[in-house]
Amino acid sequence: VQLQASGGGLVQAGGSLRLSCAASGSTFSLAPADWHRQAPGKQRELVARISGSDTTTYADSVKGRFTISRDNAKNTLYLQMNSLKAEDAAVYYCRIPPYWGQGTLVTVSS
View 1: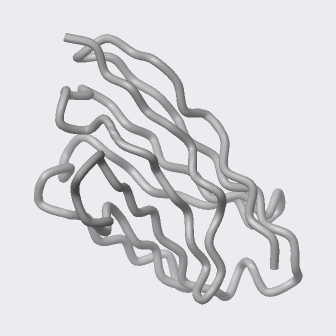
View 2: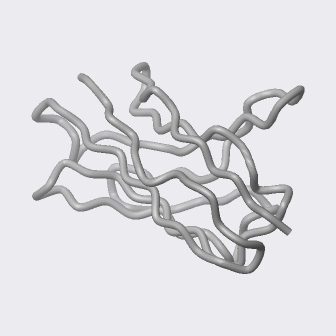
């Protein structure tokens, strides 16, 4: 499985971004998947997870602002990020265990 993350960029605080993670392989629709992030000097942390049955869970810090979803027809995982804050700035990684995407940088200006 290969994962290609995209969609990061520079956004003002309060703005929105949508991250995408395109996956190769035929088991995408059955696999749990998640987004993680790592800010400079901090450990990588789980942001959101979606199960094979599309049950979603979120870190407390992003609940109500971020939405994880998947399009099985496109083999793509998404992370819609709204009301972005300075503390959301990080490199975001998608994962379909045990595979990781390469990361996409999100910068939030205040």
